[in-house]
Image 1 (cartoon, rainbow, N blue to C red):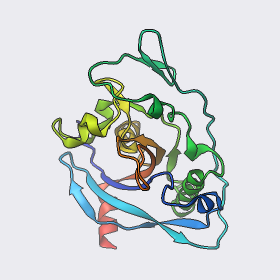
Image 2 (image 1 turned 135 degrees about the vertical axis):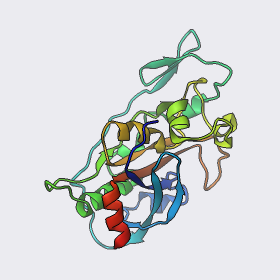
Image 3 (image 1 turned 180 degrees about the horizontal axis):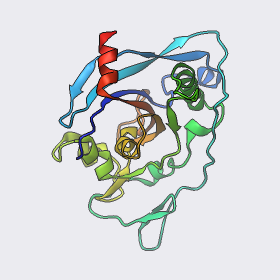
Amino acid sequence: MQEINKKLLSFDLVKDDLLRLGESEYLRPLKDTVVAMPGKVLQVVNYGKLLLLWRLQLKRTANDFSHTWRRSISSGVAASTSSTNAVELLGKAFLPDDFSNVTKKVLSKVGKNLHNQPYHPLWLIKERVKDHFYKQYIGRFGTPLFSVYDDLLPVVTTEQNFDRLLIPEDHPSRKKGDNYYLNRTHMLRAHTSAHQWDLMHSGLDAFLVVGDVYRRDQIDNTHYPVFHQLEGVRLFSNHEVRNVLDV
């Protein structure tokens, strides 16, 4: 992998579809605002990137939230099974093999895009995060520094989900018991980090990724096999990192 002589700043927010909230709270307009809290260095990966984690914290406030930068994505029928037993998902066909374990119930969730449905609680959280970054981080020409990607397809390759994140081939996170595989080469993303490598190598150095993710889990009041993540990446030059560390 070509070494990128920049430092990587990353944070993420995992929200299990607000399962911890009661129905009345779920339907009540949220009055939260999201603030980024500085994290600490977690690890240095072996190709010269410094990985830090910022955790997002929800804080009660009475301030109104701006929806200036709203963006909605329509959804429809996402998955079906053809006569050849191939799974047709989001316009593509995937032939099953001995690794296939995705269920019809989980496939029925693909394409709902709750985080893009206006005024859904997940959409409200996403918009507040966007609003914070659009206001706090401004580029040289007065435009938002961070770009937002909330409509990337949830079907990824195993290379995107694991290999490009330097996850070893024998790592437990690859187990069939923890993931939904369409076949040996394609799966439902287990994290939005599956898109980081592609976005960085397209030339982006500051972006947010929002989307539904899929992990096999026992359903209870705090766990569900389909949930949502919001993460951000910021690449810094050596000069920029030195300036940050000197502050």
